[in-house]
Image (cartoon, rainbow, N blue to C red; front, side, top):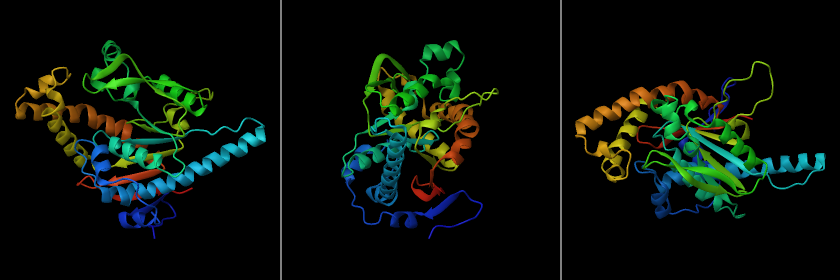
Amino acid sequence: MAKRSTRDPYQTFTKQQWSDLRNGQPMTLNAEDIDRLRALTDPISLAEAEEVYLPLSRLLSYYVEAIQELHHVSSRFLNTPGDKMPFIIGVAGSVAVGKSTTSRILRALLSRWPSSPKVDLVTTDGFLYPNKVLEARGLMQRKGFPESYDRTRFVNFLGDIKSGKAKVAVPVYSHLVYDVVAGEEVIIDRPDILIVEGLNILQPGELPRDGKPILFASDFIDFSIYIDADVEDLRDWYLTRFFRLRDTAFRDPTSFFRKFSEMSEEEAGVFGRNVWETINLPNLVDNVLPTRGRADLILKKGKDHRVEEVKLKRL
């Protein structure tokens, strides 16, 4: 059984306890799928996916069913059309914690439910202001902080998705050129489930002093996941990823970071640690970590990047 506390808003499960909640659900991914879906430095295995993400997929199926039923009841009461409402899942956490891997594996698992739902995935990177805007506002050194995003556009996007609007455009961000790509968009067209991955998606923002209603991105999220890890481990994973990219993607002549591939290992190490200490760590401490307690589910990772504990918020 999960650990219980009358004061803790979460039920806490060991990895084995959580794995048992799979309840015989068949695994629909194989080792090749996991290799294809995991990020560059994420060591997730097929066994880890079965133990952690398969039970989560089962839980989400119940949540989706419940939300759809609630929407149906509301539509019946209001005598309005009862079209299905898209279910939005938010995946939050620090840089280098494994949000992308989690999001891609969840998308693959959910899309293989017997009902074959349409599952789309969006990252908030596309909603960053273009570099020229960040430079004009003096925010290039705060890229990834809440103020570096076009939050109004992001909230409007989520509102359009929730309202069932067809063919909603999402800006495209290129990690290679480190900027939003002008004129490029991805079209999201009425998904059954939308997974949104980003650093700050659970932030409530500041409330207006006059009490007027205001919408935040988190208001549109039906189920939220926070991927947690100790700060020291996050730093090590970030630096490991930085050096791996230095030897691969950074060597591309069109890469914004090409100059870092030409640095000595010592120079690159100094630069990487400085980025962590001056940008990623302050953003984590001031903006990302404070949202952890707003998540419906917390996946706590250990030093080996594998999930050790799962916390599910009580209803």
